Image 1 (cartoon, helix red, strand yellow):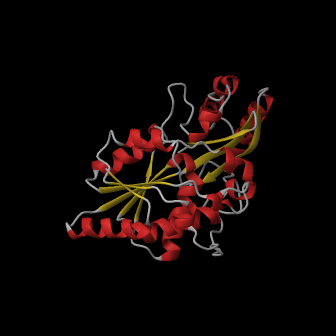
Image 2: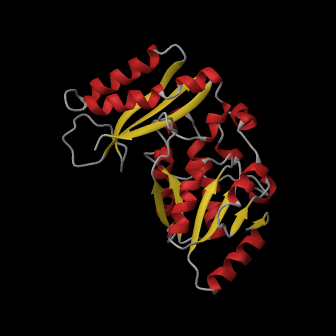
Length: 280
């Protein structure tokens, strides 16, 4: 496992791999690695990729400076974890390497940047597009792997690839959950003991929502989930929306051929958690 901090060295190493006729797999992360990230690594390795993993906490996607300051970081632990896998390259740049000057690019990410995450985290997805485009240009992977927990981000990445006309296959990998159902997230490490005990209630409520589909309208299901979460003493719903997964249009009826997904963001003791479930 080779650790690289400079873009020019990264491009050189990847060029050498391409010279050996290897396909390039890429797993971009912000560190604080958990089994969700490792599932992406395993997916890439199962495809026989020359695997590049990046660890970089990207400042431009944080609309809350306090969130950026407290985002969990532990490079040594992350690297120790990656040593258990045949990762070829780990790219760990400093902020100055990725942003030698201010990035003023603005991407047209409509409709994904105006509802749900886009509405409640203004500028977040443009920051995601800035860093992912920089990483894609540096790595130029054949395949890039992202978790479906960040469903809306995955849609944004696919749109970004289309905008930039990049020949990169974007592979979405299933949500990995704790034994009690909580979706794995780097932010889970910041939960208090009481918060961690309460957090599985989010997924439990989403599971009940899926069961209600047989006898309730989408709006009734939506109202149920919001009410259940808001009645919990430690939680408050930021949003819960039931949408078509390709275009995130709001669903008024279950009678559609599109895949339907329910997406939620919850404030839990000052920490923000997201999750989603498919209805069909």
